[in-house]
Image (cartoon, rainbow, N blue to C red; front, side, top):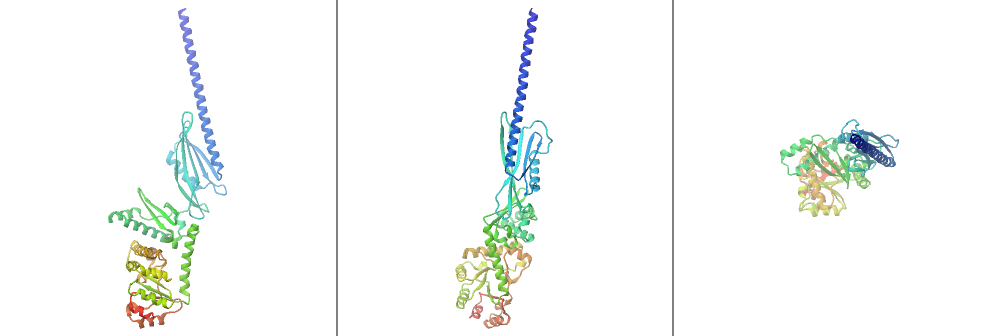
Length: 432
């Protein structure tokens, strides 16, 4: 009897264990089925959201136990934009690796794009972003999201880079190099450290530089390893080398004014008018007398001023502007620019620009290289339309009013640009 009782108890225990095991097994199956349904429904919901936005093509797959959904934008013909797809794939591999699918899905990784904001006309900005989720006990929880970066595309769906924005790549690189040198020169770095930084950056590749455009400035990041320098360049300084099709509406007006100035210069070269230009001022003794004589004869002139002569004579520049004369840049120290480095040339022009702006509230639109000494490197570094002359009065040599007048009478013709210097009293006498 006792033996029979023990057998019954054992069978009962085994039966209960079997029932518990079956309950656990089926519960686990149900739990996994619920999780699978959650994942399936979650993915389907996200895919519907992507497709709802239109112009997208979904690419899905698993990396290890992570399910990846990439929403790749398409063009008007429904074709995937390959550059965006490549960037997305590259990013997925960077974040998740390239493991083969394995096991049940326990994470979800979404990559998509959205329209960004850009001030470039005829350019579309796409911001690539990612979202990451993990499967918890009874829910799918978000780990976070990240903006990967922005890509700019022109109307032909090609990547829009600085190389496309600039019409003269060599001149643009020269401008950026000079701006970089200026910034490093203004830093607290030693000469050897500045030289090291410049060597570190090396050549500037316009198609690789990150950039943006806002508030009428081009913002360029120059990155080399852990070193990063940001340059802010007024868009007006880039007018000679940029493609105006991409300018914002706000800057198109300024660009048109720039073109009008160039046209006016060309017109003056061929017109019957004679252009009077005065170099090397302002001079507190002689320049005001020149202004008096110009006013007397209702004539206008262009004054190419030297930056180091402006301090203390700001009132003269203010009078020039008030009486309708053009104030132009003749560098800061009257150096021969062909013998200077590009960054020193830029500094010569920029220092004078700053002094003019402080005096009259606006920068010069023209520059005259001292001695008329100019080459391609100088022209690129000055980064302003340059005006020379075709009639030299030789007032700096003769210092004789009659000789100056004879020189003009003998050589001037319609469209002439006459060179004089408002710092010589003999020049002043020759005007009356």
